[in-house]
Amino acid sequence: MTDSAYSWDALAQSISADALHFARDPDSPPLDDGESDLPDAGKREGNEARRFRQLTKEVIAKGLDAVGKPELALRMRNCCTKIYKHIHENGVRFTAHECGVPVCPDRERRDARRHAASVERRIMKLMAKHPGSQALMLTLTFGRAVPAHELKTAVGDLIRDFPKLMLTAAVKRAVLAWVRKVELARNPVSWLWIAHIHALLIVPAEYFWRERKFYIDQKKWAELWRKRRRLDYQPVVDVRVLRGVKAPMDAEGRKSLREAVKYDTKPSSLVIPRGGRPVMVGAGHKEPYDIGDGRGLQPHYHVPLRAVLDATKNRRILSMSQNLGADDDDVPELEFGEYPEDVEPEDARGPRDLGRFICTEVYVWRVRGLDADYFLVGRSFDEPQGRLAMPP
Ligand SMILES: [Zn+2]
Image 1 (spheres, rainbow, N blue to C red):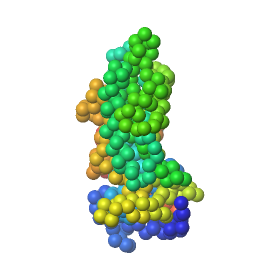
Image 2: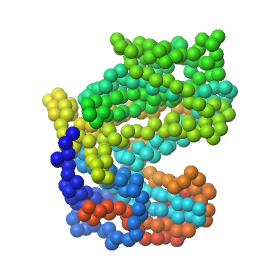
Image 3: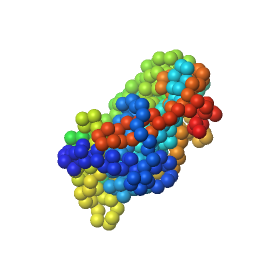
Image 4: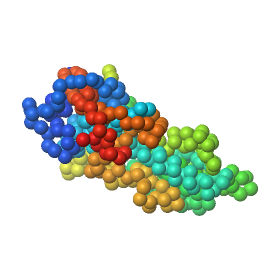
């Protein structure tokens, strides 16, 4: 792809022009020029990953503007523009207003964390009831790589066909429970998308017993998936045992389960780093896409962004079998339109282990020319009430 339309200078200019003049309150309109109330720079917060995510939001927001979704762009520009760093004796935690927009890197990161924790809890509970049960990772591809304009249909087909596979007699007999997640990955050279499903399957101890004939090998999985997908060729299917994931689960098993259910989304499909700066894929080149204007397939900018938004809209990207409690209230569903306050302990210890509260530092996101970072603007020594409370 070419990035001529997206040189860093132009990007930096637009970042400073835009980001400085948006209010910090997620629901309020942008401030006018010269009305910015950002105070003068203090100490840098200095977290490179956080800084990169924040820069990423600005390039995605520009993309959202370009595809006619300015309300989402505004929310994303207001995302985490102010963070509270609660410093305790033994560690720190952060709270911030998040935008909840689907392609936001902070939302994706948090969803992945929450999903992993929730799936882990449910699976451990189920496996404890079935001594000797084990976990498999099954990866099912759509069948072929598809151009962006076919991605929505491909994801729809995957979501439609996966339950059919789980209801196949041989699978029903062999699988106690499942969790499935849809993943999308774009090939940067061919521009084609691989839509696939990662499914975590819990199988009983008998699955591996030769005489019970429950066992399904890779070839059989591929054949079953081919039939459900009604393909005339064998789709790529991978299945492997998650070693150590069994009841009772030890620390190593939990770790490998956590890795498996984390399902990191592939942010590189939409944003890539260029010289340490995020660049929006598709901002500098056109691809055929039907934007619903009655003109059918036409070349457009920002097609990867359009395709991901369309393919995931109103669809359950994460789903699980009923016996894992799919209808429970605590299924992590961060709906569009929420402005949650995140808790992010900097290490694995929970807030309980952080020790005595010392102070809260307040940082604001600001951009000056080519430079952008979080800067310290104030401290509060009043302990916030409750785990999620914002300080005064
Ligand atoms: Zn956000």
